Amino acid sequence: MTDTKKITSALISVFHKDGLAPIVQKLNEQGVMIYSTGGTQKFINDLGIDVIAVEDVTDYPSILGGRVKTLHPKVFGGILNRQDNDSDVREMGQYNIPQLDLVIVDLYPFEKTVASGATEQDIIEKIDIGGISLIRAAAKNFKDTLCVSSMEDYDELLQLLSEGNGSISLHDRKRFAAKAFNISSHYDTAIFNYFNSDHSIPALKLSETKAQVLRYGENPHQRGFFFGDFEAMFTKLHGKELSYNNLLDVDAAVNLMSEFKGEAPTFAILKHNNACGIAQRDTVLKAYTDALAGDPVSAFGGILISNTEIDEPTAEEIHSLFCEVVIAPSFTSEAERILKGKKNRILLVQKENKLPETTLRTCLNGVLVQDKDNLTDTAENLTHATNTKPSNTELDDLLFASKICKHTKSNTIVLVKGKQLCASGTGQTSRVDALRQAIDKAQAFNFELRGAVMASDAFFPFPDCVEIADNAGITAVIQPGGSIKDALSIDYCNAHKMAMVFTGTRHFKH
Image (cartoon, rainbow, N blue to C red; front, side, top):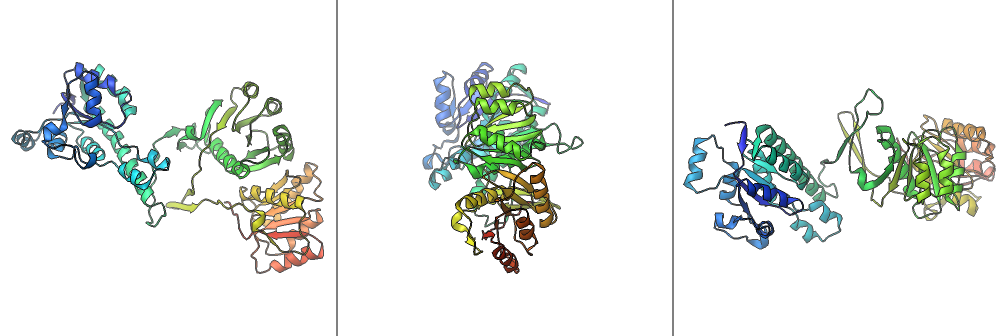
């Protein structure tokens, strides 16, 4: 067997015909005998090119509504025979099996059909049987057969056929086999995950076919990669390539802002996955300037996100700040022009896209998987634990603070006044330390905490936090409740006319 193999015959049976015509025409020019089925056969005939119907080889028509077309020994024998094996060669002649040097096959669009909300029957019909079998067979026998399993590889195939005058090297055949097994394994993973959507089978199967090599990981000495369809989430208008840390911050920003979808203009600034400023106002400009006021120091080099279009006046203000990324559902043309004034500033238009329902992270020698925290605290879910009830304004601020708290690293305390983040204590080992950090930070930026509210991501085991908050002027508290010593905090609040509500839901974020 030589390293290079001349293509003399090809089986072509594809769902997607885009880009196929130049391949067929090149094969025809090179005298390749072409076999095909159904719609692909008609497509080739319409090009004015001779094609042999697979059913003429197998003496079997397409049956069962097209479910069985190519599943036949004459087809798979033509793909799987070993041309350096004397027994295989004799059997090929004995059973009149045609040699197939090239197999061009793709798969039914199973994932797109699921995503479209189709009926179960339509989805089941998009589970490919013949195609996946042909791909696996051709890829397995790469020593004698070239397998092309995606229209994304058509340009490369055309180039190889042209440069080699129809001869393909063993190196390229093996490389295409690897691509084929990548496609087949991804396809099987998608099908399994559809059938196991309730996770009744305790198995974790992940497959991402889109990958991006990052400049480096969390630090320059670490390699970094992103596996996912970034373009399905965003349209990138401008700026340098996103880094590993940029992507983490963008993820945190998108998840936080999802809490405010459809609400009044809301603007957030994040650093190291935590909001350092966020405000909701009547205009996006006011929302931005008040978010920035929450911590103009931390905002340097931050990630900015808006839940509404960014206009020219807001862009003018943002332009004076050094920031890594600006995200919005849209930008006016003038805003885009202004923000493109810094060549490295990344501008992202966020598309309508559903976020994953599960979260994953490596742990020890395995992976931790959990449902995403999709619970958002609402007024209907609250239990009023104290004699003093929050005013309507305080209630609005408590729920606003709770949304921020949910997306801030534990232990955390969030202080809000007038739907503006005054400060938060993030990632502390003690809830008291988190509160003190928040108060100190708010006071450093000249926030008046009288009438502010406080949110905690977990319960208070002692009354120390509500006492510290009271002394700072905070008048209302939102927390999960559930401590065996809840009464201590309730008693303190009652004695000092503070309002406290329980959500019944903890929002740890580690």
